[in-house]
Length: 74
Image 1 (cartoon, one colour):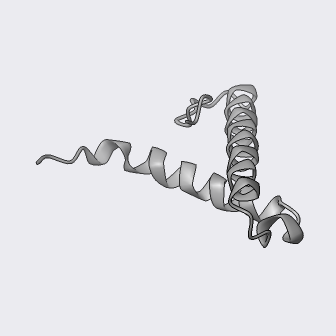
Image 2 (cartoon, one colour):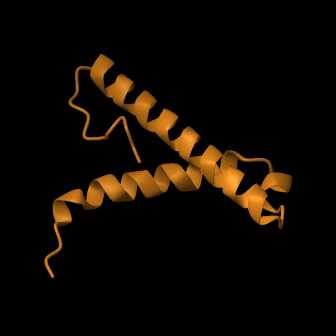
């Protein structure tokens, strides 16, 4: 099996954005033991992470830099 390491920075940035998004959620949401609540939390984490990626891309564009961050971070 061959691994394409060119994608590694994208996945690392995505993981970092998702971890940061989880920290934004209120603690009582993160510690809610209900499986349904955890599913909703992960949906919110995805929304926050995609919004962050979009903002990073816009900031890079306005600074005249090429953005290596995908705006659609799924």
